[in-house]
Image 1 (cartoon, rainbow, N blue to C red):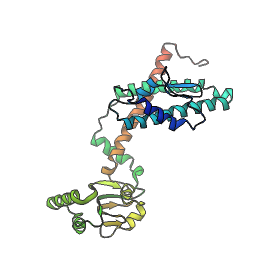
Image 2 (cartoon, rainbow, N blue to C red):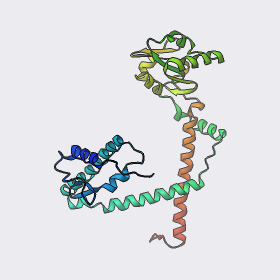
Image 3 (tube, rainbow, N blue to C red):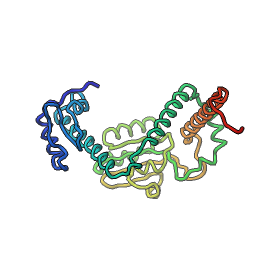
Image 4 (cartoon, rainbow, N blue to C red):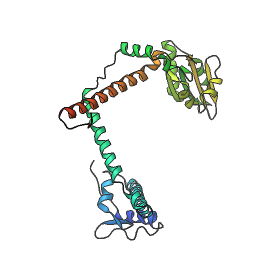
Length: 288
């Protein structure tokens, strides 16, 4: 991304002064001949650094706002670091081991991702999904209802109120098209999940309540809760307990199968590396 210098350095100076002048004399001066725009705990923030943070074609107002945010963040980091260095003991300040551990973990993670990316089989057949489902059915017991549902919210004074409610259960093409048109004209929000399963907890967020309260309002397939607006749903099908159907579990099953394959690849990688190192005498266990 190309960068653009801040247009009005005088405006930046005012921003800096208003922002940081009250804060423990952090800013002793603003723009000098050497381009310093702020100081904190003996460290300097240069104009070039600040300019590099402002994207090209940014308005003057947005430039000032972004400058404020950057200066605050920079000063906060510097001040916190100075405080930590003064308050922590020598042993607490020594982060050499943590840095090395993090470096090792990061390098290992990156290599593992390359290894997996080159070898992971992402093709999962319906047969494999079905076999997994049958083998692990006990893990798919429902903890709350799932629904096939159509949801809409609209203003209380909408002239289409009753027509929308009447057409929510529509299953035929013309009724569905009419509902879509009405929703386009007057709905605040419209969700048609009549063909897919939805977690009751997810739907309840649309009503601004918990799922138990939401389900207690269901009557003749309708859930209607009125507040500042009208929020309504028609439930085509629901399952409250027992094992969730395969179609609902399919995304989770796919993730589980891929995760298992990744674990298998990583276990094989580790074993292969150990074996290779032993064969090359790079890894020796004494006493074996």
